[in-house]
Length: 518
Image (cartoon, rainbow, N blue to C red; front, side):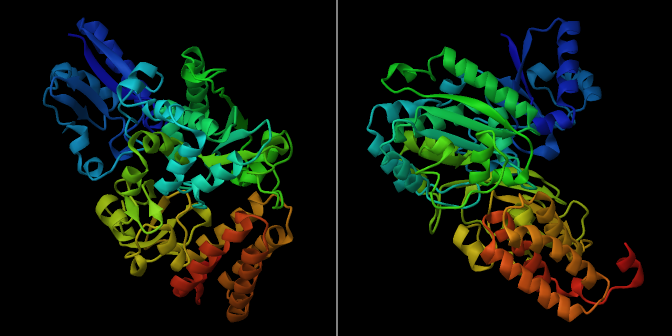
């Protein structure tokens, strides 16, 4: 029987040498005359173990990792294709504690299947949601998504079903589905992982959205920094068209839906939905004033659903398993699962999909293993560069939209960046203002000017110039930006700045000469 060896081609694994490992494995197969084949998958998301090589056996898969090219010969010497014992042996990958504690719904196939094999996708439950959607009415699809409690996973947490119903209720002959894959927040990589590791789930989710709302055209807006995701999505769309999963009669139904990839130029502000629409139309990526809402007058002036990758990729399992099944996970108004991305100064960085409700401390210390340096964790930033810094005293906060909002934080795209006690929070606050100043589209004064003045004022605090007066000025600037900015870039920049000031006041006090000179 042909042995199957699974090696990831996810960008994170590639950065750690997965291609070199695959080439070494291929050489050993040929040199030893073995009956074996290589299947390139996505990543399971345990990046401290990548590249992780898996071998299919009669009892299931056996994993080895992290594997370097120089380790490959010894793996074969130990009987790799027969799951022999080796010092890199990890056993059943699904029993690794980090993975075993997860609830994988959206990411169920990521790292398991061949990303570009539609047959593999279907064999692992793919297209079941779309087929059920095609067997019901658009109104029932919208109702199911609404009842599931799914909210936007891109950061705002807006109810997905409400957005879909708004577009469905419009009478325009042309409507659009736009997938926001401009994943630009620090410590985030869930969108990329899905597009590279399970692209058909995004295609299926967008097709369901099209059927539900009457949209016949979709666009996936991917940032240019994701070349592997762009290639994977384009290849998957070609496969889907040939299989009539996309086109004038999807899966033989009366419903038409097609889609294409558009590549962004890398502006952070284009992650904001109206800036993204301008960019898609070939215009400069600047924020649009609302109203009108994109759901009523969006892309090319037509009703448009704009959802994040994870929001759309969560739809197939909801249609397949039902609203009640999905809603059973989570807490409060935060239902279902959320792919938490753990990064920064942490031992076990990776993607952890779980139901809403775990505490921040459990995620950082028990799942992430604490700081990689072994030093105490000082702060955790949740929600990207615009997220608040939470100290250990707030680690009892449940991972829930409302619980974070109640403590002046935000979940955002669920990226977590860990910092140990060597972090200088004044520098982190300055970085937030500087980031906003650089990335601002320039349309509104609070963001454009406020962030620039914010950098200058924080520099004065660091230099010990009229500290109390300038702290008050930063606070005033943050209030102006929070309530006066047109979009979340300027509106959310106060979160990291004020949380740093409020939770770490000692870093804004008198500084020694060496520190101030840095």
